[in-house]
Image (cartoon, rainbow, N blue to C red):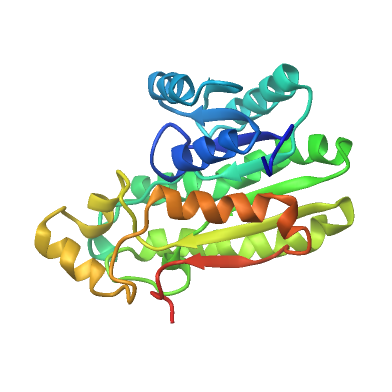
Length: 248
């Protein structure tokens, strides 16, 4: 029960890494807000987790949506302790000149500007509660980029760096900020990263990971649990690679 009586807001939590994090946090005693643009999936996820999980529809690229979601969490649970910025998207793996401006804008809106929105909405509440934790889900793409994903790589590089900058600025408020850098995993985005999901493409991706497999929601959830718990009280500004050695 490492998160007993904590309240956590997790974006993109209806599936993939986000769902794994939400499930783990709830098991460890947290009240969990499942925030996702897919309301039906969010409701189903909250139902599966049960207990103190509840669903909120939210487009993280829309500042008004994010503010409403944060206020709903505080109104429902009376406090906010943890924000996990997990929602993410990508353009299809393809030459950088083939990515449209619309695709570029959407990637940066969901992967980067969303963190701006949640920060603006959540930090005042974290300050009122005498501190808290923000965890941003970056990527190994921002540390060791793959060809064909240039603009996605850039967005995750921004996440990794802004996490460090936020950590320095918010430390006096007792707000810790860290990031995770997962390697490609078993999520709905995998086919987008590879361009197409074939045995050959999977083998090629796995061949770049010394540990010999893709990441799983459980891998990411366990790392997130540590960084958001009091066990990591002295850790802020870290970008923890959960990558089976990919970035070595």
